[in-house]
Image (cartoon, rainbow, N blue to C red; front, side, top):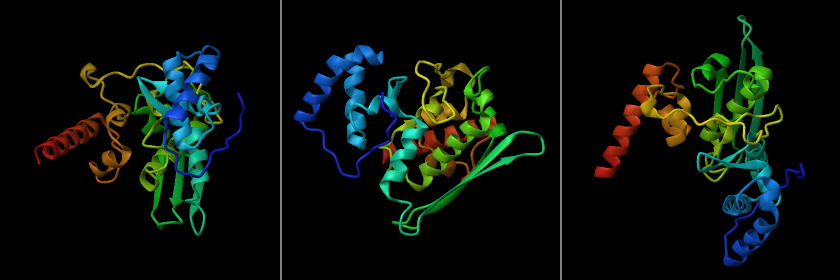
Length: 245
């Protein structure tokens, strides 16, 4: 597949003609992509809706646990293409090596269209508590790269939740990621459910936006299992209150 990051900056509506094109493309390409035709059609349509060419969409979109997810590189392409960093906007990334030898990353974003800004810092210690780090994974081989992608995504969830069609990133579902932010297909493992007694931040992210999680924890990423449980209880309570109103 091509490595181009071309996306279009326009509103796209899925019409019967677009669906027909996706179906025709899927019938010819699905087996080469290692997908069923149904999954290929969903991938083509979601990518097209976001602004990717249909033939490029599988490079940036993966179906994990039944949900469409974006690769970190695809998400960044959408952010840059959106123009939110123009006209006074800003996107800065700074890497750190801490005294104990672990990595940290700070990302700052400011939108030029609304002046909304946010700064997010993550450390490898934060990531370890999410349950995403596995033996021989990208997190062990190139931690600084993956931490950079993760921090960028978290910051974007606050500054630009409208970019990306509400999709979460594959890295947050346990998919292994290359240093360049692409998904290594078939590399993910199912995350433990909340009933398994191993509640992680990744579990929360599967059900709630990062903005909701931060708001429920005084705008801080929950680090301990107790904090994560408290955030889950708060989010579930708000959900119940909302259903009653």
